[in-house]
Every structure is written in structure tokens, then in C-alpha cells.
Image 1 (cartoon, rainbow, N blue to C red):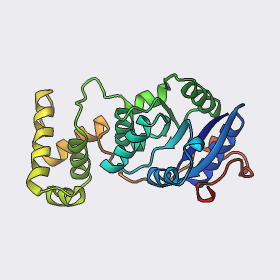
Image 2 (cartoon, rainbow, N blue to C red):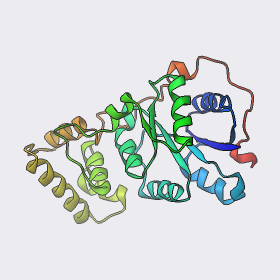
Image 3 (cartoon, rainbow, N blue to C red):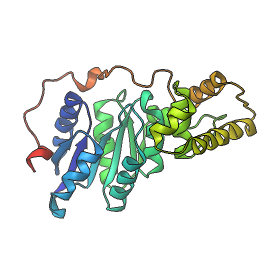
Length: 241
């Protein structure tokens, strides 16, 4: 019997995904969690024989911390395959999840049949990225790839923080944050896109998906994921493990 676990911060969306996965023959949903850190804690208290083969991961709006990415990388190294569910507002985090090695990507705008098909492909050892997911994750033709720390400081700075405040949020020295930001400017300049002001830098960051004009939009749920009633419990909650 193959096993799956769902990590998603939205209760209704998580419940609908659980219902869909439960309908896949030979697949058992062994738990649901709100965050990746909650999932890691669940693993610590669960026998290895009950660990999931597949993690369906709803990518949150906010950027993950380096610890979250490290946790995801460790899960991948443990043999847990990952199908990520993303939105345009989670573009930067989705790219970091892709860099961590997730095997599948789908968006909340894709159909429920697409979700089921993607889960089956990833479980069989394949990889999948829908066209909508590719449009979110790819770097545009004029885009510039940044390191995780460079992308983080850019997102915070483009979102309106001072460089000093961005450094405090990241837990690094102010001069280190400024060094990262200078590297970002140099990379954009080398690509023929000089950013002489904070606004110009923010506009490039928005265009390339490293930051969003609205960093935390309202928690909208796609209609196709809530069009049916809440399912009866089809898998055990992580809390009950």
C-alpha cells in the first residue's frame, strides 16, 4: 500500500485534496499537517514503516525560512517524493522548492483531474510540471537567477523594508545584507537591466517573480477545490498519530 501525507495551511483545501487522494486505488492518506515543520515533528513520533511515499505540499504565500528549505531537502534525501501545489503569489517560494528537488508542480488553477494524475505520476517515480506551474516557476527570458539569500533580501527590500530592517528579519549583519543587495544590483546590471533606485529594483523584482507588489494577499481558495462538501475523515490527522 502506498502512503501519502498532505501539508497545507488551508483547512478546506487540505480536506478536498485528502478526499481526492483517498480516491486513488492503493493509496492511503496517513496524515495531514498545517506546516512543513509540523510534518517533521510528526515524522519524529511515527514509525518509519508509516512514513509517506508522497508529500503533497501546499506552498504558502510567505517566503520560507532557510530552515524550512533545509527540512524539505532532508525529506527528499529520506526518499519522500514531493508534489507541490502553488499559486502566482507564492512564486519565489515555489522556485526555492523546485531548487530543493520537488518532483511535481501543479497550481490551484489546474483541475482536480490534473492533481490526481500528477500524484500518480510522482508516485510512479516520474516528474511533472503543468503549464500553469511552469509559467509561475520559470525565470523569464530576461530574468536573472539569484541565490536564496540574495532573493530573500531583495524580496524584503522590494517589499518596502530598509536594508537594515531586512537584515534584522533575516538575522544577519547589516553590512552582509547590503553586500547581498549589491550583488543583486550587479547581476541585474550585467544582464542589461540597471536599477539605480529602489523603485527600479522593486519593479525588476516584481517582473521576475522574486517579490510581489502585495506580499500577502487574502487567502482565496480556488472554487474547484471547495465545490464539494467537506469529506468524512479519510485519513488520520497528524495529531492523532
